[in-house]
Structure formats: structure tokens, C-alpha cells
Length: 296
Image (tube, rainbow, N blue to C red; front, side, top):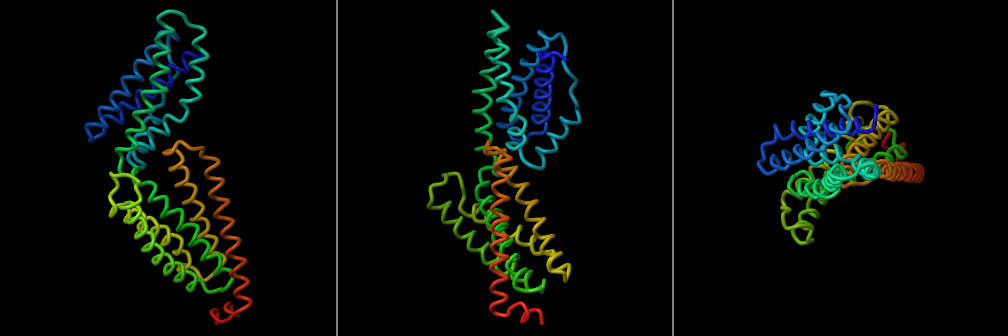
């Protein structure tokens, strides 16, 4: 397959994705932006088809997966995920410029400007318009803090006691108290912290508190399903790792950060807190005799 046909197929795929997303979009402003994106990509596709004489094949299943992602994960995530490869594509386009002259070169220069300037600015506008993204920082605050803190509580109890019920109840009590406190802090931050005039303090508080307690409940459930402390902790830690990976990937894409480094850093923090809490819990359990007291 020649490079022109590959570029043609990529642009056709992007055109079809934007067209399908526009067809299901209800917000008139977002719909118009998506239709504009679709038209841009159609022009790009026509340009590369004229050079290649044909295109690489496009999988409609992949197109439908992006539509599904839009329904489940939001428009901003879907588009930014779609555009993550654009920086490398633009570099390839710039290299290809050396092979062109006249109107063809001018058209490719316009395509590069579309990719670098126009679409990036509109993606930033989309992020500002979508409610989920506007409150992403508060959701991230609730999830990240709860995962680390409650996993630490459970790890501490793993070292201090062999009673799963005690660990589960402790996680819920600490988690509920912390969720209320975090929601209050988020309310004050949104109201007085200057994080943005369009953020509602009440919504910010709910986003933080609800995401915090959601994670708390998921992490605590295994402790009520088994009497094996090790099994419960392993299951809870697996949930913590999965939540961390999923949300880190999501927020990294939204914020244009490197996914691999962000996931690695957050998992190292989680594991570090877990080990430290386990060692501290073991120490306290041995010194105070708490392990034997709660177990009996």
C-alpha cells in the first residue's frame, strides 16, 4: 500500500466518524462543529484520493465503536482519542510537502493548518462546553483521593486484624466521612477559589462527594462477601487498580497527557500507600494486640 492511499484511508475514516457523530448530536452548536469537522476531513480525503487514485479500506465497525464511545464516555474524550495520532500524521504530511509543487502543495499546507490550528481550537471549545469535562477535575479529586485513602485503610486493617467485616465497615465509615468533607471543600473551592465562573458550587460538591463514595462502596464490597481477609483485600485492590487505570486513561486523553506515564505514576503511588499502610497496620496490630482482640 502506498503512503497516499494510507493517508486517504485515514482521512476517510475520520470523515465517516465525524459524520456519524454529527448525525446523533442533539446540541445544535456541537452538531455544527462536528459537521464542519466532517467537511474538513472530506476535503482532505478527496485530496489524497486524487493523488493516490484509491484508498485503503475503512472498517465501519471501527466507526461504530467511536459512536459507542461517544455515548458512553462523552464527545470530548471520543474526539481527543480520535485525534491523538494527529501530531505524527502532521509530521508525515510536512515531510510529504517536499514532493509537491503548485496548487497541490498549497492544498496540503491548508490541510496541515486545518489539523494543527483549526481543529485543535475547536476541540478545546468542545471541552469547555461539555459538562462532564468541566467538572472532571472535581470527579478526579473524588476518585483519586478515595482510591488511595480507602485502599490504605484496608491495607492497614489487613495488617491489624483478620476480620473482614471490621475492615469493610471501617472503610465505609472513613469513606462516608471523607466524602462529606471533600464535598464541602469542593463547594468552597468552586465558590471562592476562582476555578471558573461557569462552575456551580453545588454541582462541584456533588461530583466530588458522589465520585468519592462510589469508589468507597466498590472497594468495600469484597469485605462483605468473604471471610478471607487476603481474598477480600486482593479483590478490593484489583478494583482499585482497575478504577485507577480506567480513570487515568480517560483524564489523560481529555487533558492531552501521556497515558503510559500517568498510569505508571498513579499506580506507583497507590502501591506505595498500600505497602506503607500494611506495614503500619501490622506494627499497630502487634504492639496493641488489636489483631487478636478484634479476631476474637
